[in-house]
Image (tube, rainbow over all chains, first blue to last red):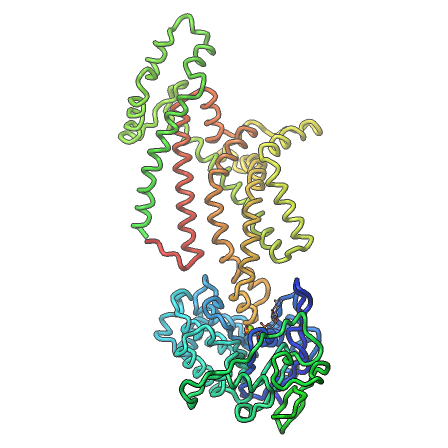
Length: 322
Length: 317
Ligand SMILES: Nc1ncnc2c1ncn2[C@@H]1O[C@H](COP(=O)(O)OP(=O)(O)OP(=O)(O)O)[C@@H](O)[C@H]1O
Ligand SMILES: [Mg+2]
């Protein structure tokens, strides 16, 4: 049985420009210890998907309007707030994109890292601080035990993200959701942080949802990849299958825009032309149609559903070309 | 830290120098000088000449000479001069008055903060709810209604309606602490609530700002409840600018205390100052202003030091 089973997740926002469906009928499964990468352009609904699972959508502007998310026998989307609180930071932990602003500037790093222990394990602050030292050591923060009393401004971006990872590990969660954990970091630090995250999830057996807009880097870390476009999931498959035979034109476009090591020098990358869709003014039919090389008349009227194109390989496209 | 304190206190010197210069000269320019008053009050105009009186009080000297004598008295002997009317040492009088004003100020500040911070926080948490509207309307009302008007109403109406009038005989703290507290409570509440208006709006604004920060989302994501998010993660960050505001309000607090002391007949620095001004008692006026100046600077120093407690990025060097 899957650790997390999401069905028909739909989240809407009311904005000044009208209502929009940021996440539209998204479904996926995640096994114990599995790493799923959610990939997509900016605004495709990756963060909203993650925040919906954590029930941290900004209310009242945002509402989860449909769907279920079964996790350890409970539906996260209908759990009372109090029970949801005991899931957050304990069974499911989250790491955010902005290490510079995601830590509280006026609380010591150790106290922030150890806080989930106090909240969920009834640990004393003293014990939590000691544990925080161990955790920071585990994420290979240099001189960890001496720095539990330091404040975030004394840490570099990469070190703060290590602290965020340590915080996520505090209660040995079964699922870690990392929302673009390395986007704000230097390229060299990015690789280190991803490797660390992967290593730690392997050690602890935690499943990982790795959100990114970078299909190139994800390759090495994910078991499975889900591609999102305009709030919908347009393709999902094992990482291997998706890289070898992308079946959705959008995924093809994403892959074509990745620089490759084996690429002939001087060959130009092909970015996908056009703009991401305006979610408040979505046309009927396929949201990707205006940018699609293979669009047909049918694409203008019919919104394609996710269908299994090959065993374990799903896509939402009317064309069978690939 | 020590070097920082020394530097801050040294910076007091030029401030006080200029303040004393200005106060010393301007009080002597108030129309109708002390000689006129003495002559008018005692009807001695016929007997004693104006020149003789001026000479007796040392006011016949050039202002510069008077200033030098006054400053050297303070610096060399800690002597702030004598009251021109009572011939009593000014410092002695002031020292009996300071605790009274200090007590009123502290009580008003406590009232202001206990009103402003909870209402500001709740207003921010329940943005655009009824509670928020009531809190904000209250704050605008407090801004619009001057403290002196409130004070006067509290003095006047109960006596018109019910024939009750507040005790005007001052009860010193050391004689009857509880009676003193009761007597100080009304002016402190009035002064405190009128001060609370701005602090409350600032608390609300900062709280709304802080609640939007990424680290607040992090706090929710680790399973904190609303209480933990607000008290542990938001409040401290929101209060940093609020503390600055309190420092900036120190002169307003002292000014308000002067008025409250007048209305409620509380023998503090404010009442002393008003009496001194109306009688042109120059040494008393200048000394009170000097002390108030020192107080304002010290309050702001305390405020700056308290940043160290709130904001770990602050280091005093
Ligand atoms: N609080 C909000 N209020 C209104 N609209 C929102 C809110 N949060 C997200 N949205 C909208 O939902 C859509 C999806 O946003 P989301 O943050 O999930 O994108 P993303 O895929 O994470 O993009 P990025 O790569 O930039 O992080 C966007 O169109 C965004 O404008
Ligand atoms: Mg995002």
